[in-house]
Image (tube, rainbow, N blue to C red; front, top):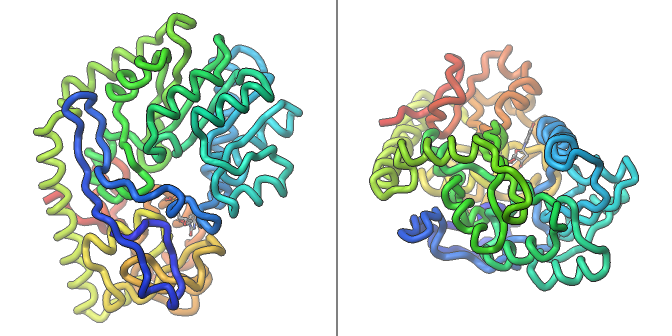
Length: 397
Ligand code: TMP
């Protein structure tokens, strides 16, 4: 696989980087992970193209999360908030606006610049235990440490856990959101497994790992974001009551044998059937002369296109609202990416929505395409998300 977010120019085709994408489940800690982790400096480079603020739904979700953290978990307004992977500042802005002390840690210069232009205090670096110690010495302990879709991206899991414990105040909370393994399995959304998603957490794996670092899972909430995520809330051991949802979810995972080799084998079989199903669907539409464009050059698109062999002859172009991705080519398959307005100009018959986690928002924006008879396809079976008859998706085999 190429790096999922490494959209490139034609001159870079000959030197494109590839690695082996190979997932596995650890027999000891039950952590679902990829075996070969490309160098993180290669992935989160100065031109990393992802900006959180491009989705109004995600921005609204982060605002609501900031409120929940203050009211439910702290019972007060925090005095110092740190965010790991603060991107363009879409979460921290909710505290900055209230004059609350905050610090974002963001390694990608492209996103950090956007945050700084919004007056969000940002340290352009990778989070590590060393950096956590420096932040504590300079600013004092954090009442809240937050990370949305970033903790599962950092291969130095232990460095993050010990850094968080060091920086967190004794009555503070560490809250993070990550794609949930149970949803990946249910939706057969193999496109969530790529170089940036080093780990796909389950409740059992999170509770087990953080226990070793003096942090206890005290609460959690299942969320619709990212196609199915979990918000984990951790606190120093013994500092807070553990909410009943923690044992409820551990029991659910045990009952459905989530963290077991049998489940993984069934997942692999389902994924292969979904790949063949999508490939046949696209081949049949192409044989009928239909034009299919990709919608949303999400990291997930790289996995689907490269795994299913969807090349230029099948997907002549993609559209995406992120300026950094436009007028570049998709990793591996080299499909050109244009601004969404190009849809009106080129009038494809179908849009294959790689960013299916934003399907509702995208379909709302593209009502005209639907009204003119344009069809929608999602690349994975989405057991419990789609269900609308105008949306085509591969079967579960
Ligand atoms: P994500 O699934 O990793 O959040 O990436 C979503 C991609 O989809 C991102 O590149 C931006 C793009 N996008 C659009 O092009 N239009 C939209 O309306 C939305 C919400 C996202």
